[in-house]
Image (tube, rainbow over all chains, first blue to last red; front, side, top):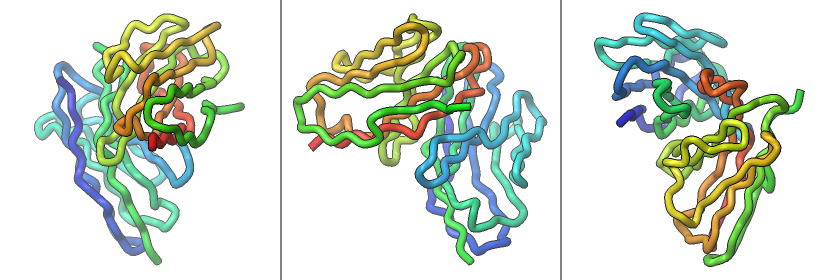
Amino acid sequence: GNSVTQMEGPVTLSEEAFLTINCTYTATGYPSLFWYVQYPGEGLQLLLKATKADDKGSNKGFEATYRKETTSFHLEKGSVQVSDSAVYFCALYTGTASKLTFGTGTRLQVTL
Amino acid sequence: GAGVSQSPSNKVTEKGKDVELRCDPISGHTALYWYRQSLGQGLEFLIYFQGNSAPDKSGLPSDRFSAERTGGSVSTLTIQRTQQEDSAVYLCASSPTSGRAYEQYFGPGTRLTVT
């Protein structure tokens, strides 16, 4: 079956540090890949997506590249801010079932 | 416009009691999903509705769990004879069509605590 593996958190960084959150997946077929973010007290929001190999999704300074050869979709940001503190979820969708498969989430805490 | 809303936001219940969780999707969204977020378990798919029918119930963990959707809008997730392992945050999401399932808009969730 489909699965998503994320690096465990929490990840604690100082403001302006470089962020990487690793995500790898296992899927049949050719999945679309996503990063969702959950800010404190809020619902999940789609952060970025990539629908085919080598696509790069980007939003709010975050980027992730769909790497089919390594089955990865790592999230990166060059300079994090305190306001980026949240839980980040990697997810995939294969279209054979109308549902998303999520990783366990990675909590990011950014300090001044 | 209004997003997905869920009620109650928090629910504490005693083991063995039944609970109902409600989801109001975004107006006009035909697809609706229920997920469960348990500590350290990520988001676990429960059930998917397209209109009022549920073509995928594969994620419901036991026959104590059921869900319905009426009028192509509001959905209710019912848990009978609650157990402590049912404690989790229950999330609802809606999307415009099933073919764009990744465009899911999530509600804030209902935190269920079974004592």
